Image (cartoon, rainbow, N blue to C red; front, side, top):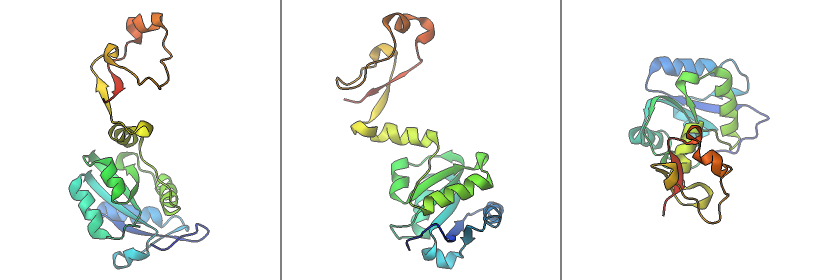
Length: 183
């Protein structure tokens, strides 16, 4: 993928199996002079590739590889109803940003495209949380839910809880579940 300096136009390829969704995405691009659509046969020239799927799963991620097999391709996914893919696998396939279709706005779309073309990324908090729990965050150890707060334990080098002993025993302060590090 060519290096893009964001003082010019960002070239974007758009893919959607749904013609109406495709038309809506392209229409959102036409209102901003900073972005320009490139045709599918010139996808290798795109600074970012937009792909829209109702369900993001392993099949959708395989479709990304079929769209572009270049390891430098930066994808922005517009996700519909379901996310069933592993977030780490999506990142490995080149996904750099995800927008939920039900909260999609043209301004957020263009802003996210510019971020992706500039080498950045943007994931909804729910997907960040899934990735964090799976990868273990900075500790590198996967996290899992504990059945109750009394089962939760923190590593010896972690920060202590901000709850006082009295607050921990209050029924209103008891969360329904807690997170602890996996052994």
